[in-house]
Length: 245
Image (cartoon, rainbow, N blue to C red; front, side, top):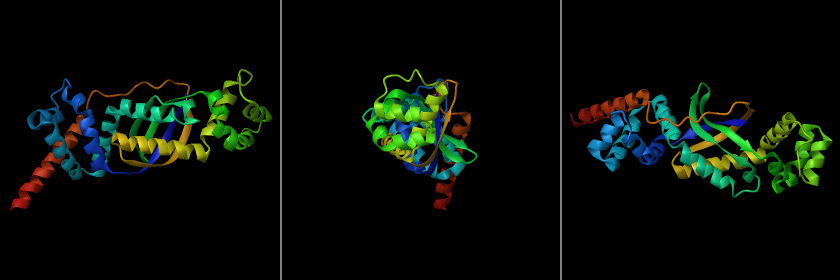
C-alpha cells in the first residue's frame, strides 16, 4: 500500500474554517457530548454561529488555528476523498489511482497533507498513454531493466512474471516523476479548494507500507480544539469590551 506526505506551504485559515464549519455542522450538532460548538449552534443558530467562529479564528495563534483546521479536515475527509477520486477517474493515468484517506496533519517540520491507502492498478498505470509516451523511457532507465521497458512499449497483459517488489519499484518510479506529481498536486489543490480547504501544496514524498491504514474519522472536535475555541471567544469578548472604553 502506498502513502504520500505532501508539504503545505500556505493556508488561508479564516476562509477555510468559514467554509468547512458549515459542512461539518450537523456532525458536531448531533454529537453525544455537550460541547462548546454544540452549545453555540443551539444558542445562535448555524449561520450566526459560523460567523462568530470565523471572526474568532483570528484570535487564535497559528498552532491553535492549525489544530482546528486539521480536525475539521478529518471530520470532512470522506467528502474530500470522494471529490479527489472522482476527478482522478476523469484522467488518463488517474484512473489507475484510488485514494482511501486524506487529512491535514501537523508535524515537527510543518503542516502536511497525509494521503493514506493509495491503491494503484499497476498494469493500468503503466499502460496509460501519458506514461507510455512521456514517462516510459525515463522509468526504464530508473528501473535499469529491459524487461520493464519491453512491458511498457509492447502492452501489458500480465505482470505475473514480475515480483511484487519489482512492480512496486516501477510504480514508485512512475509516481515519483515530476510530471505525475505536478498533476496530482493540481488535482488535490483544486478539489480541496472547492471543498473548502484552501491550501497550496509543494513537495511530495512517497512510501510503501505493508499495513492497511485504519479509517480515522473522529466523531467531533477534541477537548483541545474545544478549549481553543473557548479561549478565542474570551479573547474576542475582551477585545470588544476594551474597544468600548
